[in-house]
Length: 142
Image 1 (cartoon, rainbow, N blue to C red):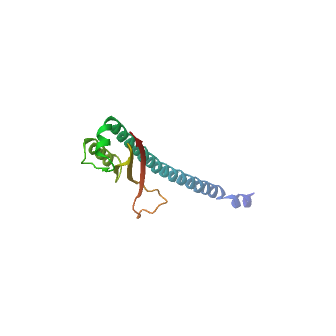
Image 2: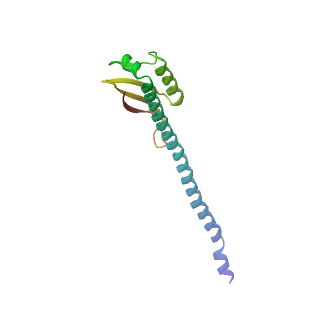
Image 3: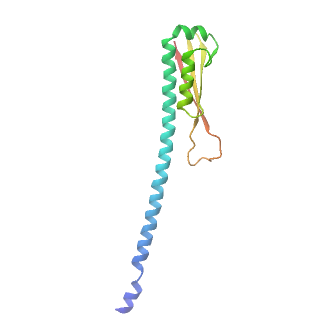
């Protein structure tokens, strides 16, 4: 009876250590998944902000249709052209990282609203790389 007891000593401790190791690996996976989810959520937020800002400019253009058609006759609108574009440009730079917006006439009352912004890097992308530029474009007909 005594020899059987001595051969079983420490088995429970090894089982506990193996269980803790498996649990630790699982928790590391959950933490990694949570970090990626937060980054993807930030990317989704940036894309949504670009969509809202482009639609904001489209509504400003519709509100001042005559002015936009006159000023943008086959020319690109700049921030300094008038208050609608200037205010929109400030909103873009304050709400999106490294963003710049342009409104370009496509002729016959059609315009292209484009917003370029820096996309947040994911964990599997090298941190030394420059941020990826994303362009959101919206075609508008006045």
